[in-house]
Image 1 (tube, rainbow over the protein chains, first blue to last red):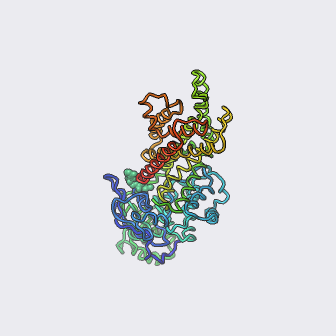
Image 2 (image 1 turned 30 degrees about the horizontal axis):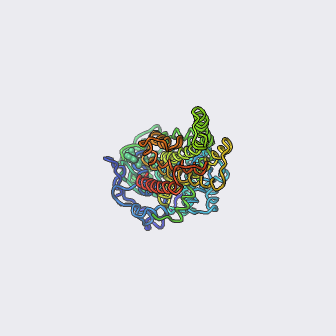
Image 3 (image 1 turned 135 degrees about the horizontal axis):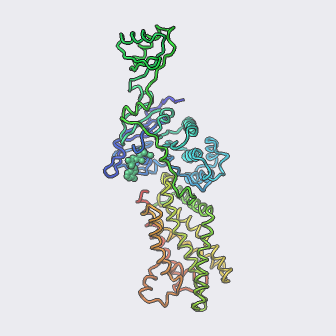
Length: 327
Length: 256
Ligand SMILES: Nc1ncnc2c1ncn2[C@@H]1O[C@H](COP(=O)(O)OP(=O)(O)O)[C@@H](O)[C@H]1O
Ligand SMILES: [Mg+2]
């Protein structure tokens, strides 16, 4: 599913020691990133880690306290209008006008950017919203609304698309659907994607590279595979006819193992996997099960931050005024 | 402060959005007609007949009618501020702020949108007056009415936006606006002729821009006024320019 990033040396997004302070609090702390053209880049971190603040600075909505950031070679503070021409943002909370229809909403933004109606049609098809285009957005489901907002972000063919927690609060099926849309637009629209998330699977499945952010600091960066391989710890489960023999061989090799139910479990390094595999291969006929569990992104996250990411989907509440149809 | 083609497009798109927002809220259309009409009936017929107030050759109802149109526009203008705060609260405004257009064009788009919705309200109200009290407003006078409405709407819409940039919540905004808008309305000569006012009150009335809006409407709707047309238009133009620049400056600086 993932693309090979051929052209990594052209940096579409570059930040150097980007920092934002709110009084005493450093919401974003010396963040330095380089993101190549065509990449799907993920900023993964718990609530309050500084993800939205980073996006606000990269998209010219917030002035950095110190440090610099360039988008497509333009400085976000000195050349905001050139940056704005190259980017688009889908914000964490829904920002589409409820009383407009999907078509009117896209028209409005196409009007601002001077995009054609053909482009709107194209996006309605890409995001499967054609048959809903004349329905008021008020009646859209969360997932449809998110798709519409992503479509809105693409009316002017931006070079970089920022997605702030694009699937926050959506159910699993809808989330999967949004992922496939993001993947297909990365393929078909030739756009660099910078997304934030606190969902491990989202970063894992979707992103070419991931930066883990905690308390405003980047603690690790790399592809999902690279991040996991750093842990160098795997859990191997083997089921054999004579567990005693197997454990004896393992202890000769200097490996600790334990019995769990009727199988043997061994924690081992990456190099250890092939050693154990050799042992298991020699016992060929006796082996019923051989399973290697590589570390997950969760493990990586705990390793770097010492804590787990909690899912706080309930944070995504709708404003009471909006529910009452005030606007 | 230069304006580019993309700014003009943004102004058009944003004002269009304001008009649609107005047209989609049915209750808002009804109340925007009902409220001024209630005021007019209560004061124009109630007060007018109780005290038998006359103004030259005009009955009190004819005297009051332009004041009520001005009131409609004044109250409608405060909605521009509400619209900015609501946009801020729901983040809608961020979608506009990431667009490569000047901040001034966002303010102007809101103001023109507010002006167009004021036109819709005021046209309905004026037609009602023509029917109820048999006002005869010719086509040229009606264009004059629209001009004055536009000047009031832009000036006080800008004023509302300037206040809104400083406000975080609707409650706070509502409080401030009531505190300011009511005196502006009552001290504008909408209810009473300003010629016979005591001088301390007259000073306040003369420095109130709405006074000139009411006077202009009165000139075009019933043919009498306290000030000359050139001085009315001059005051309103200057007021509009100052307020719009102030609103744009505050909006730009607020960063949102
Ligand atoms: N306008 C603000 N004023 C003060 N503190 C803020 C403001 N915005 C965000 N913060 C704080 O900055 C930190 C990072 O916030 P944010 O970037 O929204 O995190 P995330 O998007 O990763 O959940 C949080 O501790 C948050 O409380
Ligand atoms: Mg956030």
